[in-house]
Length: 161
Image 1 (tube, rainbow, N blue to C red):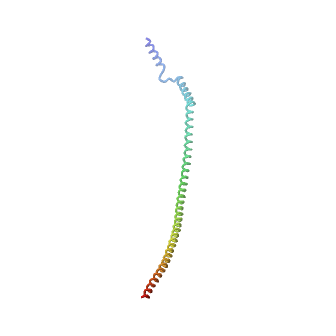
Image 2: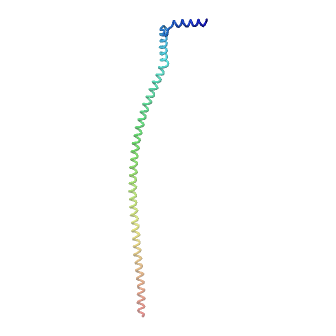
């Protein structure tokens, strides 16, 4: 019996309400939805949107400053490379000049050494010639004295005999 009264109450409720009731609940639900959307917009969506926008601005500014720093670094690198190339050219030229100067100095020193050696050779040659002349004179004197002795002996032996 209780069971049948519940069934009757459910049947009466079913016959009174249809699938779509457009009574006061629909506008009330719409108002509640709009209020909820406005509250969520004020409390959640706007701060979140602002945070996202500020983060996007921060990223954009960092990206721009990074591009500026990168371009500045690249220009500095190019400038340093040009300066390095110029310095290398200058150092190569200094090396070439120093080698040329060293060759000139070596050639002068070599010429001076050859002149000194020539002077020493000439002095030695003159000394040898002088010694040769003196030796010839000494030999001539000895030859003269030996010739006189031989002549004296020959003449002395011939006078005796």
